[in-house]
Image 1 (cartoon, each protein chain N blue to C red):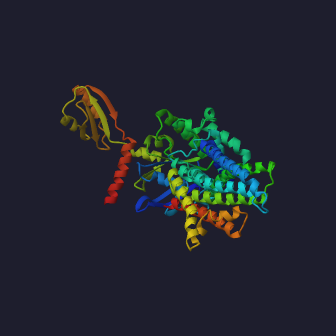
Image 2 (image 1 turned 90 degrees about the vertical axis):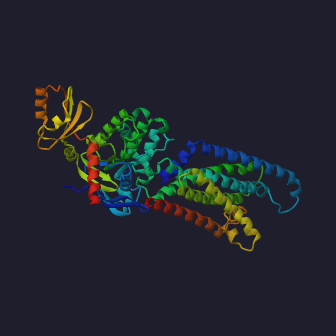
Image 3 (image 1 turned 45 degrees about the horizontal axis):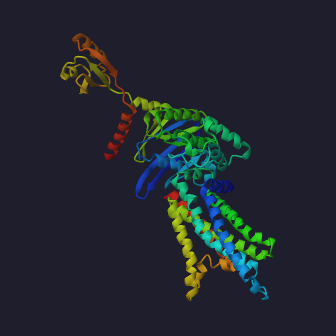
Length: 246
Length: 313
């Protein structure tokens, strides 16, 4: 299982895609990071007098993680699309299926490998706010909570992407459907906010991210992501097993 | 007789309503090369996929080295090496990287991993391409990497699905030699639609057509079936066909060209001697006289034809 995870991560870095995604996401986020800093510099004088005013963490680090969530939503489909769809397309899937591995191991291996890639990405993003600690005092707990939230969010994104990649032979279709589903789960929140029903809001992946980002760690949010990941991984395993039968 | 290494009982497989494999029995013993023949679409690949655990059968059971493939897949799969029709390769890896990954997923302990990879590379003649990316190798070499992948964990049974398809004649010869070498240490199931390949490599033959087994015997028995009852005759100044037909033992004559004839005779009355004497005494100017032999293709068609006739009756 870990062999597969390692292999998956290694192969990711063999393709230019992974490097490109790392580089471009850094570029975009760095730009956003700088605008946040600029904004903070402008209003620093005004808010310094107010007691209990938001500080560096609230005005720079947390918005950055919020932006990162959106960017990851766009990037995840690109990484997850190839997981199983490409194996099918290249006819390399039989190699894994005829090896002494269970389907669960194959799915978990691929999942963990991809997750490790996103951990690297999150790690790089975290470097930006941490660099501020040279000249400012950061609320490390709040940042930790934000990182944790981002991790949970990406874990769910990846599980969804993996499942949709298992459904098809075409990586592009996997990417588009993953993107649509993730996007839907993002905007569904808007209807949830305006309407009476909180169901849509509850369904939305991002609405559970907001409290964690603010430092509000609730079991229900963590459980929501946990269930999400478990659900989609189980579906993937079931799906691959059924494909062997039919 | 010892118990078979791999045995399958009454395997059936449907694709929707379409029957792909019907009640197939399969067994392979230690040190044996089993040829699995059939025209395209006969169900060869489907059977191979089922034997290797890539596809679950709708009915039947498969036992590999005493482990049931369906209830103990991990133990069972450890004893088979499988090369599908399309070699399953990660083309962005180098040969060594790919094989050591294969060694890892086949649970070869890290101590033996390097030697396992080296052995596989050596046996498949990949020594001078071991650092190259698989993507840039020729089709023949890719096929070898595929075979190396199948034998890296020294499985009891190696399943090769049309290993020589799509290769040029030289590569085909090399791959066949490689399969012969592998057969020294492993039992091999070889699926193919090329009949001479089976003649060259296999001890036993199974022929499948439209999902069911139509022939199951040794290669020698298949050769027996190839005994034929015709002579190919070429004459410089031939007589009428009618004259030839009147020779004792001759049942019918096909004129292939003006001077070239195919003479069919009754099985126990071989007219070769009589033809020879007649040509000399009548001055027909014999240029060639060849005892006919059914090609394996003919036998193949015959067997399939018989089977189809039987099912019609």
